[in-house]
Amino acid sequence: MGKMKAMPPVEEVDLSSVKYQPQKIDAPHLTGFSLKLFVWLMESPVLGPLIISALKNQNKMTQLLRYTLIPERPMYRPEFPPQEPEQGVVLVDEERDPIDRLHTATYALPKYDPSIRWSKESPPFLYWKIRDYAHAYRHNITTPSLVAEQLISAIKEWSTTNSSMPMLIHFNPDNVRSQAEASTSRFVERIWKPISILDGIFIAIKDDVDCYPFPSRSGTSWFDQVRKVDKDATCVARLRKCGAILIGKANMHELGLGVTGNNPNHGTARNPHALDRYTGGSSSGPASIVSSGLCPAAIGTDGGGSVRIPSSLCGIVGLKTTYGRTDMTGVVCDGGTVEVVSPLAASVEDAMLVYSAIAGSSPSDKISLRPSPLSLPTLSSSDNLNILQSVKLGKYSEWFHDVSNTEISTKCEDALQLLCSTFGSQIEEIVLPELEEMRTAHIVSIGSESLFPLNPYCLEGRRSDFTLDTRTSLALFGSFSASDYVACQRLRRRIMYYFMEAFKKVDIIVTPTTGMTSPKIPPSALKVGESDYDVSGYLMRFVQPGNLLGLPAISIPIGHDKDGLPIGLQLIGRPWAEASLLRAAFALEELCMKFRNRPSGIFFNLLTTS
Image (tube, rainbow, N blue to C red):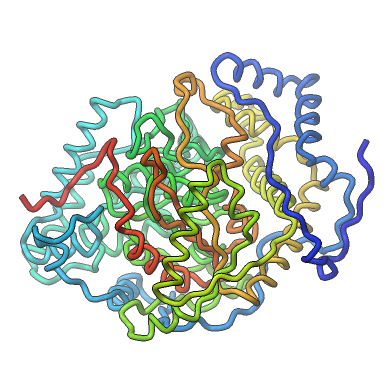
């Protein structure tokens, strides 16, 4: 039995008395036979509830959810106070055609200099960007069709020699060729008539986002049998309208219910920096595709760090937008309160371009959330330096340093100090109470919202068709009661208050993106999966505010650890303040470029000039 506890009203919490509690998750690490046995026990009608109850007690979930009085009213989805207009931005009416928005976004970027990007004497760079492809097409260096053939050849070669490591679940070379031929004709036959800067740009789509004519399995082996796809998701339709070439459906952690990217159904995508390590998840395929150079951008979803975690582990950029900023119609998980659809990209400017094309709230979210006007940073403006000088960065040091290896937090600190010494930005110490409570509120919220649409299939006997680690998660989620869910929505309101108070002092909150670099893949995990909540805890340590509170966040690669594995720095912004995040991220990216390396495990150069 727990002991009754009453939380004080959130306004009365004394921040000076707050003590950070390092996160520790008590749960076994299981693969192979031990995982099979554990799932059997978890699903047992007699033993299962006892095991789950013990695990929840060990992790103090029961005490918090059942024996704690939480005075705040529930917040069943993010509620944002009105925000001040951002500085140094160009407003982009989201009612405008995405092609027109892209035109505005292109002019907001610094001037493109082909002499730097294409000169053989220039310093080497990591990735070809969207504007590099656009320049190549417009100056007859290559065509979308020629690049398509290189991409098809690279994917076939990788799939043939590494069939157990697929980046894509659905891929049709003829479909890619058809799109590329149509794009090429716009450059060659009707010269200077490309649709937009994205015309001929290759983009991968995560398997839980509809992209007709491909099915959406969400990483399962069967979900396309019960959910048919007859048109593109709204975000995909916007990209297609801009002329983007959609190469297929990218691999993912099954149903998005994991953050490593492990997938026994289709094979586990690998980290291009080290093929024996995870990409992170659940947007594993999109991250692997962008990191390996196959595409400059991809579309993922983020309900628990699923864009930012793999971006950090694979050394690319991952933007998580404000909840409600982008229409979720046509996304498998479109009914929850923590999930968004967002871009992963090779660079900040590529993330900004794709974001400008796909952004735009649904009609219902425009009414209920009242989003601030869609805007983009004017990175080409002379005022950019002055704005960066005035930026205040909030850092909760004890949280910041709660990582598996101090090399992560140290390199993130070095990047921030470089930003401050170069532009004059300031770092302010802040305190964010009840982070452990936030983690519980997030897992109950996303777990309950994930289980609801799957319940009918589980009751029909299809639970055994899911992977073992998914079944472990579903067993845990099924133990949450209605009162648990309500308690967590009361906690959501408390945590939102703490973060909004912090944003009265600072503009951006900074953390490492993950508490560890890419974990190794146990060989036994490839066939039947893996359950390791300790690893999941480290990978998710800093990402939950973006999901539970709906705040925008971005992960920027800032260097590598001693093993050559990428490290990501996370910026968390005020509601609707994507433009401010993109500006700071762009500056950090430029400053840290010299500390980054191309992937050593796999890399494709599709825009070769030789």
